[in-house]
Figure 1 (cartoon, helix red, strand yellow):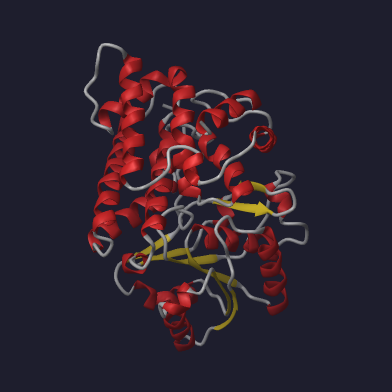
Figure 2 (cartoon, helix red, strand yellow):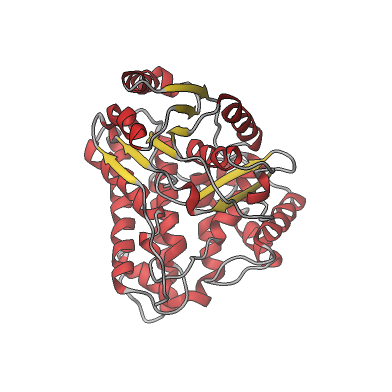
Length: 393
């Protein structure tokens, strides 16, 4: 195992009607004027935004609003939020939504406290020195951004999708009411479950010895998500399944499932970022479309982990060959994706990249990664291109 630091400062308020406490929680952080940040009209249609405003009014808190966050959140809206936040002198940001809204809020939080271009942080040109505090009312279980230090933003100039990780942006609190996820389309629920799984799988497929307790937590989390993803496909209103998936979303990306494992592989995420930047596909669906090809390409370099995944997570009975066991585990994972109507190839996303576009994605992925990505197997641009080609067949 490797040395590690584990830092999770986010206060979690979990359960039915938890959003009624939002005003009190903001006051605990000594805030006075709030930027309410959200996505489409769903928060208005469901009455959630009105309930939040009522809580803020009851606690004599001022607020301004900025909606319009899209999946794969855009830098242009981040700039708009920074300008609004500075002009209105807000001192707290409340993200109402899922990972895209939270990531956008984090970027705005950096930009309000910084005089330079916020994109510099995502382009790895410099580090943030401060960020406005943020809170979260979670409506989608997927990204885990409600407890993580990460934010992913797409720059429309060049369609570049980059992440920036910094503990400065960890939310002060996260309100998690599983009933708020019950209005999601089935496709979005399934995409969220894939994203949750991948946040743990990126940390699981690493070389060398790992902490047994970390592996056990990771394996239990993955199995729990898969069981409940199938339940939700049949019964979207199942509160217990919604609750299990929502809590798994946070635990999968707050660092818990990677303690002692190093920083994780993250190659599948890097490959998917270029796919969703170019074609604006749903992040979870993109991950499912890429993962099987990545796994087949790298499994020989990380064979003990793939064998352990096959037996402990996917329930594969070991056969004489470790590699055959590993392949059966990969196939079983793809079968799971199919069972919840997720794609296992790029074509199943209904996008059809040309050879030149595959080359462009591989080149951009390599550039963003600084030349190479991954630790299960270190991938260079030619490797990335090969995985894209495999996934595009």
